[in-house]
Amino acid sequence: MQAEYMKYVTGYVRLAAIACVIVFCSACKPSSSAGGGSGTNPQTVANQVDPVRGHLLHAQPKLPTIKVWLGAEELITEIAREPVQIATGMMFRTSMAENEGMVFVFPVPGPKNFYMRNCTVPLSAAYIAPNGTILEIIKLDPGDEVGVQSKSNNIQFVLEVPQGWFDRHNVHTGAVIRTERGSLMETFFRR
Image (cartoon, rainbow, N blue to C red; front, side, top):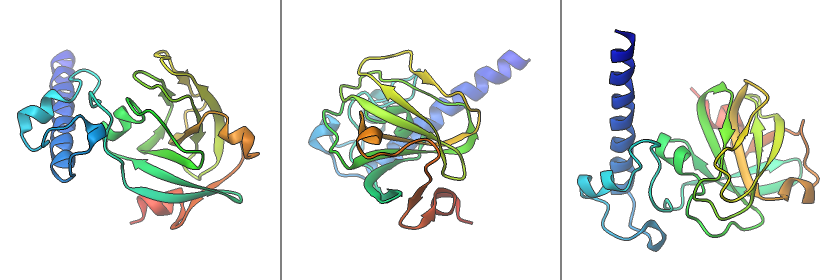
């Protein structure tokens, strides 16, 4: 019974991810980095998502952005919040500017493992607690499909930046990240 329920839930989650992609892609103009096509045909969009891992099979269009601060350092970060956005991340992209990043927003805190399947840009990532404190900073090398498991079980946000950014800008564990709208919790979970 448990196995049947899990099979049902897994299938439902996959369908929900595909539905999110359909809604997301139909609301966006096609981008040359997004592999072309109109993105409005549900069958075409469904064929653009890996059915097992739930990520796009091409670079995702630029996501909405927000300014974040780590002390005096400012970044413009794309917001990956939907399951397909999180699963795709920086896959298939070929560059990231020095003061750009991508912040991943998870609905609940827990352990995280970030890897670099289909990623060509070397990255660093900060594993961040719900209160915005950087708990861990990791190095992510292109092609690493094993990834780096967080030591903490209390990770709700992950910030990816060009590899070495944290060192170059003297940002270390214990730093607190804020946005133009306040704390990370106020920004993404305001009620």
